[in-house]
Image (cartoon, rainbow, N blue to C red; front, side):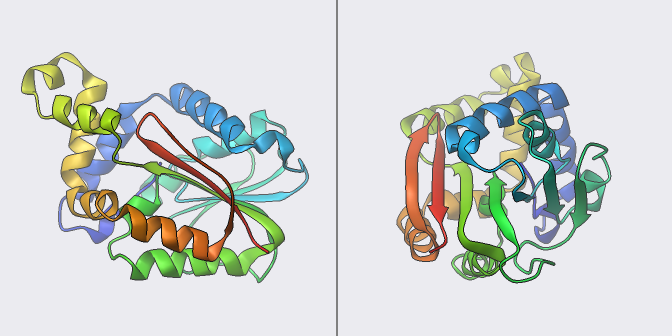
Length: 223
């Protein structure tokens, strides 16, 4: 999970603080480990060059390392979050709309909750997917896990509006705070599902796509 929150008018540091208290690093690593397995990571070559886009504090890379991937990198726009990473691989500060990588040099690109932070749709999503396509090798894999407006997520939104629930649960309050501070980008993402799907499918040939607990899981291949 990561952020382009510095492009928003609302206090980016408040978003980052809420993100850091939403889950402990160990909890986030376990979550990412489970997601990677759902995305099909067991089938990816362990020597492949894997990059997590919008990588935040880099716990997705730690999950990849637990699965024995050895050529791992991350990129995020937030210097504060990137500076927290001290694991295997490396994290650089950069814009995922213009990746600092050569053409056709990566095997797998992963996004876990970054695309919905893009300020402008469809333009920023088109730019991100186009550059992801550029840096992937032929046959390379693009994976995304993003919020999706399912009945479960609608229920979560309703609970987040309850001040008593927020006082009783620090995790819920952190989530509600993140939503408050990314509301413009979050809502524009959630309310344009067909646009998002069309752009994903235009950029990559779908291999797997499913919904689970308010998330879209998309796995596509560069042909």
